[in-house]
Structures are given as structure tokens and as C-alpha cells.
Image (cartoon, rainbow, N blue to C red; front, side, top):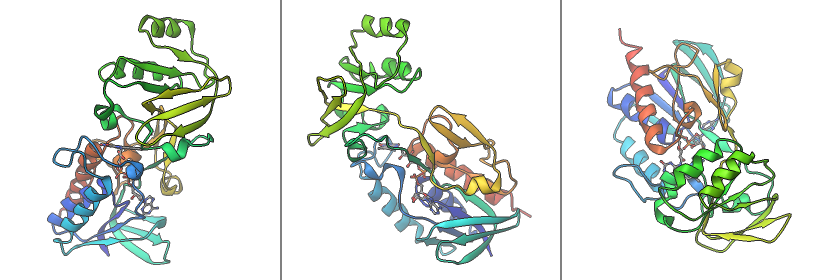
Length: 297
Ligand SMILES: Cc1cc2nc3c(=O)[nH]c(=O)nc-3n(C[C@H](O)[C@H](O)[C@H](O)COP(=O)(O)OP(=O)(O)OC[C@H]3O[C@@H](n4cnc5c(N)ncnc54)[C@H](O)[C@@H]3O)c2cc1C
């Protein structure tokens, strides 16, 4: 039996494995190799790894983990979980049954692409979610924002630190008159109508096609589609969740323990606020250390 099974071996899961491996705990990491930022050419904002392809950062992390003889990285999906603290079982997609005293869930979230031709194909290049991740490279250029409700107003204020040229695409949303007045005061045009297609032109540039016409071109488009956990294992376990503006997150305490003793969660799956590689790594390391310290005799 392992001390810990980690489900999801990306930034959060590997950070947990590193702490556990250094504490000489026996760990299996199950991973299906689909990190959320795999669509992006470069990852930004992680100290020491800025502007590197995300898959390169993960490959280097896996290489470094090879030093630790008690850490096993397995390319497999976790399909189901049963048991309680000190005696959990995980069934993999390959039909293997694994046992562990603690679990760390770090299987991330999946962004739900709207049914708009070209949107999914542009995700991570012409359409991005986060100015901290991608804003610097397109600072001062013409940005577009796909409106997704009242929280979008905060993005308008945020984006001012990167550009003075912003166009809002209402995309069928009814933007209230007081917000429209504020946008007008900031010289931000609002394009009404629904987005029917996104046409990419290489680089970040995109043309936004609308049902009301005419089309509008921007240097980059920011959008915030809803997301959902990449697996439903937490549902079968009945773990408590919290609502976020874009979906749900697992509820955890400051040690990253979920509502079920012995099960910890880290990364975007349990991050109700700012999802990033840096926070995923920080929370993953905390989850690993918390799981290890919970087993001290
Ligand atoms: C387009 C885009 C660009 C981004 N750019 C940046 C950036 O520049 N800088 C930054 O800091 N952040 C960026 N982010 C955010 C960043 O991607 C996430 O915060 C980060 O990936 C979260 O790490 P994680 O380990 O929680 O989850 P993930 O990286 O999503 O990893 C989850 C892992 O779990 C695996 N998995 C899922 N289900 C199972 C299962 N049942 N069994 C086993 N394994 C499973 C998946 O295959 C995956 O490998 C970006 C996000 C997007 C969408």
C-alpha cells in the first residue's frame, strides 16, 4: 500500500509528490497528461520558468522527480475511489486497484468551449483568459473582451494596466445602462450582437464575426468560459464544494484537506480565486506536506 495516491500529475500534483518524495513517503501519481494550459505556447509568471512552454516545465519536473525512489509516476486515469482514511482504494482505467492511506486530488478543471466555430481552435492563442498570463506580450495593443456577466466589469478596470484600447463584445448579454455609461466614460466601445465565429489570422490576431455584422478585428480576445472539474471522483465521494463565478471548486481548509478526512485537494480543482501555475504549485506543496504530517506517529 502507498502512503499517498495523487490523482492528477500536473503542477499541483507533482509539487505534492516532490514534498512527499523528499520525506521518503511512498507515492503513486496517476496522470492522463492533459494540463489545462496545454493550448498555450508559453507559460508566464512562474518564477524561474517564465516564458517556457508549459509541457517543458512539466517534463523537467517529472525528470527531477526521478531522483526519488519512493515516487512512482503512472500514465493512467483514476476511474473510481472507495474507502476511508488509512485505507483508500483507487481503481485505474487499466483495471488496476491501488491502495493508499491518504489521497490528494489534483485533477484540475476543463474549460467548456462555447459552440462557436473557431473558438476552441483559438483557445490559448487568439483567445485567452488571463492578463497576468498573456497580457505583457500584447500590452498597448487592441484587446477585445467577451462579456460574460457583471464580473466582466472588473476585467475592464483590470485591463487598463495593460492597454487603453479595449472593445467589449456583449455577445447577447444585456449590459445595464449604468455599466454602459461607465464604459462610454472610459472610451470603450460596446459591440452588440452574438458572436457567430472567430477567425484566427496567425499570432494572436482574430476577427470576431457577429450575427448583427459588421465583423470586428482585435489583436487578442479575452474570454472567461465556464469550467468544470476534469473528473467526477469528488462527486461519488460526496466532497463539499464552493461556487465560483465560473464553476465549482472543492472546499478545503488551510491545510488543503477536503470535507472528508484523509483526502486533500490542490490546484485549480480547489481554487476558488486565482488559478495559476504558481498557486497550483504552492497549494500542491501544502497538500503534500499536510498529508505527510497527518501520518506522523
Ligand atoms: C489558455 C490558458 C493559458 C494559461 N496560461 C497560464 C500562464 O501563462 N501562467 C499561469 O500561471 N497559469 C496559466 N494558466 C492556468 C494554468 O493552466 C492552471 O492554473 C494550472 O494548469 C493548474 O494546474 P493543476 O495542476 O491544478 O491542473 P492541470 O494543470 O489542469 O492538471 C490536471 C492534471 O490532471 C490530469 N487528470 C484529469 N483527470 C484525471 C484522472 N481521472 N486521473 C488521472 N489524471 C487526471 C490531467 O490530465 C492533467 O494532467 C493558463 C490556463 C489556460 C486555460
